[in-house]
Image (spheres, one colour):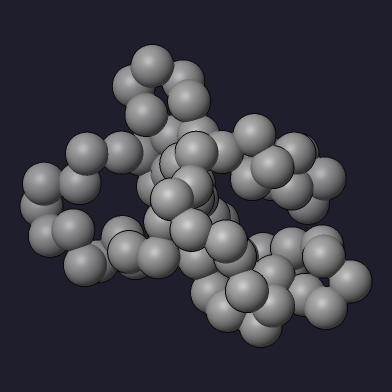
Length: 69
């Protein structure tokens, strides 16, 4: 859980995560992490990233892991 949290805080994101919302952590082929609102099934067969985990931001600003790859 700690490793996933560290990866999330290093991740590129184009939004501010909100408490109680679900997000998806991916990794680019370059090794960079990306936090997205788009789930792995929503990409179809052409996902540009490797799926790592589905997470939810908790009120204490930690992340609950809902699903891991």
